[in-house]
Image (cartoon, rainbow, N blue to C red; front, side):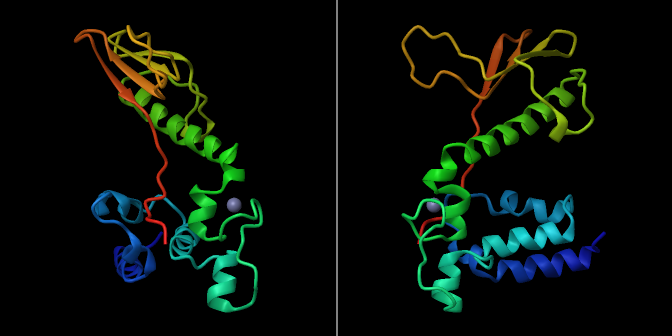
Length: 190
Ligand SMILES: [Zn+2]
Protein backbone atom coordinates (compact mmCIF):
# COMPACT_ATOMS: atom_id res chain seq x y z
CA UNK A 1 0.00 0.00 0.00
CA UNK A 2 1.37 3.41 -0.95
CA UNK A 3 1.40 6.17 1.65
CA UNK A 4 -0.46 9.46 1.16
CA UNK A 5 2.88 11.25 0.73
CA UNK A 6 3.93 8.85 -2.03
CA UNK A 7 0.67 9.35 -3.88
CA UNK A 8 0.89 13.13 -3.52
CA UNK A 9 4.46 13.21 -4.83
CA UNK A 10 3.53 10.84 -7.60
CA UNK A 11 0.55 12.91 -8.67
CA UNK A 12 2.45 16.20 -8.46
CA UNK A 13 5.24 14.84 -10.61
CA UNK A 14 2.68 13.45 -12.99
CA UNK A 15 0.88 16.77 -13.26
CA UNK A 16 4.08 18.39 -14.50
CA UNK A 17 4.35 16.05 -17.43
CA UNK A 18 3.09 15.96 -20.95
CA UNK A 19 -0.39 14.58 -20.46
CA UNK A 20 -1.55 17.47 -18.30
CA UNK A 21 -0.14 19.98 -20.76
CA UNK A 22 -2.11 18.39 -23.58
CA UNK A 23 -5.44 18.19 -21.82
CA UNK A 24 -8.13 20.46 -23.10
CA UNK A 25 -9.21 21.88 -19.78
CA UNK A 26 -12.46 23.23 -21.17
CA UNK A 27 -13.70 19.76 -22.03
CA UNK A 28 -12.87 17.73 -18.95
CA UNK A 29 -13.08 17.86 -15.18
CA UNK A 30 -9.50 17.73 -13.91
CA UNK A 31 -10.69 16.67 -10.47
CA UNK A 32 -12.69 13.71 -11.77
CA UNK A 33 -10.03 12.78 -14.31
CA UNK A 34 -7.36 12.31 -11.64
CA UNK A 35 -9.63 10.86 -8.96
CA UNK A 36 -8.36 7.35 -9.70
CA UNK A 37 -4.88 8.39 -8.54
CA UNK A 38 -6.15 9.37 -5.11
CA UNK A 39 -8.43 6.40 -4.59
CA UNK A 40 -5.51 3.93 -4.56
CA UNK A 41 -7.59 1.11 -6.04
CA UNK A 42 -4.80 0.00 -8.36
CA UNK A 43 -1.41 -1.56 -7.73
CA UNK A 44 1.54 0.83 -8.00
CA UNK A 45 2.83 -1.04 -11.08
CA UNK A 46 -0.51 -0.64 -12.84
CA UNK A 47 -0.66 3.05 -11.96
CA UNK A 48 2.83 3.67 -13.31
CA UNK A 49 2.01 1.86 -16.57
CA UNK A 50 -1.11 4.00 -17.08
CA UNK A 51 0.79 7.21 -16.32
CA UNK A 52 3.59 6.20 -18.71
CA UNK A 53 0.99 5.53 -21.39
CA UNK A 54 -0.66 8.90 -20.83
CA UNK A 55 2.74 10.56 -21.08
CA UNK A 56 3.46 8.76 -24.36
CA UNK A 57 6.32 6.97 -22.58
CA UNK A 58 5.38 3.46 -23.65
CA UNK A 59 6.84 1.53 -26.54
CA UNK A 60 4.84 3.06 -29.35
CA UNK A 61 6.41 3.46 -32.76
CA UNK A 62 5.83 7.21 -32.90
CA UNK A 63 7.83 7.56 -29.67
CA UNK A 64 10.59 5.28 -30.99
CA UNK A 65 10.78 7.25 -34.25
CA UNK A 66 10.52 10.83 -33.01
CA UNK A 67 12.04 10.66 -29.52
CA UNK A 68 14.37 7.66 -29.30
CA UNK A 69 15.36 7.58 -32.99
CA UNK A 70 15.47 3.79 -32.81
CA UNK A 71 12.93 3.31 -35.62
CA UNK A 72 12.22 5.04 -38.91
CA UNK A 73 8.60 4.06 -39.53
CA UNK A 74 6.10 5.65 -37.14
CA UNK A 75 2.99 4.06 -38.64
CA UNK A 76 0.68 1.88 -36.52
CA UNK A 77 1.54 -1.83 -36.64
CA UNK A 78 -2.15 -2.75 -36.90
CA UNK A 79 -3.66 -0.33 -39.42
CA UNK A 80 -0.48 0.98 -41.12
CA UNK A 81 -2.35 4.25 -41.72
CA UNK A 82 -1.69 6.60 -38.82
CA UNK A 83 1.17 7.44 -36.47
CA UNK A 84 1.32 4.87 -33.68
CA UNK A 85 0.94 7.14 -30.65
CA UNK A 86 -0.58 5.88 -27.44
CA UNK A 87 -3.66 7.99 -28.16
CA UNK A 88 -4.03 6.38 -31.54
CA UNK A 89 -3.81 2.93 -29.93
CA UNK A 90 -6.25 3.58 -27.12
CA UNK A 91 -8.93 5.44 -29.04
CA UNK A 92 -8.39 5.98 -32.76
CA UNK A 93 -7.15 2.83 -34.51
CA UNK A 94 -9.68 1.61 -37.11
CA UNK A 95 -8.60 -2.01 -36.60
CA UNK A 96 -9.13 -1.93 -32.83
CA UNK A 97 -12.40 -0.04 -33.30
CA UNK A 98 -14.01 -3.10 -34.88
CA UNK A 99 -13.93 -5.18 -31.71
CA UNK A 100 -11.61 -4.13 -28.89
CA UNK A 101 -13.05 -0.65 -28.28
CA UNK A 102 -16.55 -2.14 -28.21
CA UNK A 103 -15.46 -4.75 -25.66
CA UNK A 104 -13.93 -2.03 -23.49
CA UNK A 105 -17.08 0.09 -23.74
CA UNK A 106 -19.22 -2.88 -22.73
CA UNK A 107 -17.03 -3.66 -19.69
CA UNK A 108 -17.29 -0.03 -18.51
CA UNK A 109 -21.07 -0.25 -18.88
CA UNK A 110 -21.12 -3.56 -17.02
CA UNK A 111 -19.26 -2.05 -14.07
CA UNK A 112 -21.61 0.93 -14.02
CA UNK A 113 -24.65 -1.34 -14.15
CA UNK A 114 -23.16 -3.51 -11.37
CA UNK A 115 -22.77 -0.45 -9.11
CA UNK A 116 -26.30 0.77 -9.91
CA UNK A 117 -27.66 -2.69 -9.02
CA UNK A 118 -25.78 -2.66 -5.72
CA UNK A 119 -27.03 0.85 -4.89
CA UNK A 120 -30.65 -0.08 -5.62
CA UNK A 121 -30.64 -3.36 -3.70
CA UNK A 122 -30.66 -5.79 -6.63
CA UNK A 123 -29.53 -9.28 -5.63
CA UNK A 124 -26.37 -10.04 -7.61
CA UNK A 125 -24.88 -13.44 -8.34
CA UNK A 126 -21.27 -12.24 -8.34
CA UNK A 127 -19.26 -10.41 -5.72
CA UNK A 128 -17.01 -8.51 -8.13
CA UNK A 129 -17.97 -6.32 -11.09
CA UNK A 130 -15.50 -8.03 -13.40
CA UNK A 131 -17.34 -11.35 -13.00
CA UNK A 132 -20.72 -9.71 -13.46
CA UNK A 133 -22.77 -10.33 -16.61
CA UNK A 134 -25.65 -7.83 -16.81
CA UNK A 135 -29.17 -9.13 -17.32
CA UNK A 136 -31.61 -7.37 -19.67
CA UNK A 137 -33.92 -6.45 -16.79
CA UNK A 138 -33.28 -6.15 -13.04
CA UNK A 139 -35.59 -4.91 -10.32
CA UNK A 140 -34.48 -3.26 -7.11
CA UNK A 141 -35.87 -1.51 -4.04
CA UNK A 142 -38.95 -3.72 -3.77
CA UNK A 143 -39.88 -3.40 -7.43
CA UNK A 144 -39.71 0.41 -7.24
CA UNK A 145 -36.73 0.56 -9.59
CA UNK A 146 -36.22 -1.26 -12.88
CA UNK A 147 -32.79 -1.34 -14.49
CA UNK A 148 -32.77 -2.10 -18.20
CA UNK A 149 -29.64 -3.13 -20.05
CA UNK A 150 -29.18 -2.39 -23.73
CA UNK A 151 -32.91 -2.16 -24.51
CA UNK A 152 -34.65 -0.37 -27.35
CA UNK A 153 -36.86 2.55 -26.33
CA UNK A 154 -40.13 2.85 -28.21
CA UNK A 155 -40.62 6.36 -29.51
CA UNK A 156 -43.38 8.11 -31.46
CA UNK A 157 -40.91 9.40 -34.02
CA UNK A 158 -38.11 7.33 -35.55
CA UNK A 159 -34.89 7.98 -33.65
CA UNK A 160 -31.85 6.13 -35.04
CA UNK A 161 -30.01 5.79 -31.71
CA UNK A 162 -32.80 4.58 -29.48
CA UNK A 163 -30.91 1.96 -27.49
CA UNK A 164 -29.20 3.52 -24.46
CA UNK A 165 -26.70 1.40 -22.55
CA UNK A 166 -28.64 1.56 -19.29
CA UNK A 167 -32.08 2.84 -18.30
CA UNK A 168 -32.98 3.36 -14.65
CA UNK A 169 -36.75 3.53 -14.34
CA UNK A 170 -38.25 4.86 -11.11
CA UNK A 171 -41.63 3.15 -11.04
CA UNK A 172 -42.99 5.34 -8.23
CA UNK A 173 -42.07 8.69 -9.69
CA UNK A 174 -42.62 7.36 -13.22
CA UNK A 175 -39.33 8.78 -14.46
CA UNK A 176 -36.48 7.29 -16.48
CA UNK A 177 -32.80 8.09 -16.48
CA UNK A 178 -31.06 7.16 -19.73
CA UNK A 179 -27.33 6.45 -19.56
CA UNK A 180 -25.17 6.22 -22.64
CA UNK A 181 -21.45 5.67 -22.14
CA UNK A 182 -18.72 7.09 -24.37
CA UNK A 183 -15.06 6.29 -23.79
CA UNK A 184 -13.15 9.45 -24.47
CA UNK A 185 -9.42 9.67 -24.97
CA UNK A 186 -9.63 12.90 -22.97
CA UNK A 187 -7.01 14.32 -25.26
CA UNK A 188 -6.85 16.65 -28.17
CA UNK A 189 -4.99 15.29 -31.18
CA UNK A 190 -1.55 16.68 -31.92
ZN1 LIG B 1 -3.85 1.84 -36.04
